[in-house]
Image (cartoon, rainbow over the protein chains, first blue to last red):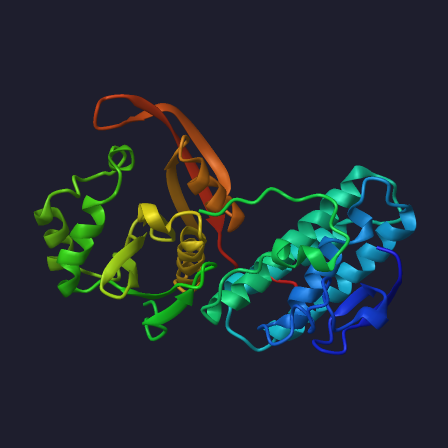
Length: 160
Length: 188
């Protein structure tokens, strides 16, 4: 998605695009899609990375590095949310995400970098879902917010 | 000892339906038996006991011991729509291994309930000083395998033509393992 990084004025999420569009959805429906949702910042932060340019087939190295650093900030935000809470499963997921992120080196042009970044993001998603589960809420579904992003590909979706 | 103060707890599914998770108690025999009677025959083939018989479920209720088997029910009102159990040993070489089993009503599949119940068991396992959770799944139960893998379970072993269904057919048994956290593991 073209544009610059900005923070959604509604949920505070770190988004990318045209900040003048912040607060309005495609089709003219008013309101940020994450507004009033539990863990809105984490969910929006995840999705901004999930649908980010670094995952495109033709992403330049700059986007990979940008995605890498964004994942780092995202994991730090999850860590702040988990701090002081007795949720060992979520802490384990976050730990796995941090390990994958640390192992990736975005300066290398290797498929392993993208795989490790994907792993880190996947573990981060699981930690967010752990937080939502503790509140009795359904798991986060990025595809529910796909219209907000430049989502070209629809990932496989399967729920038991 | 697992802290059960978190129950009953409400869980909302993707379709907006709210269920209650709570441990099975002695009064649940009828509704749990109803639940098992409606499980499709192809799923029942893989059960270890004949859950179509009320006395089997009655025996579970009569011998409830949460320290050995903790059954968590998912209820919509009075109806059981999911059953997840955590099995443990008090002594012996597998006392740090919890075995998990999950069964979901047919009309409650594909809306995230199975995943939520696995997530609940994982939380309980983490709180139980266990080292591993283990799930045994028939290889053909692909959605169940995916739900466990989504929760961080990894394929530990596969035994070819290892188990038979109630008609005598042989199936591959997949063992999925989830390694628990230990303080040494955590960098955060």
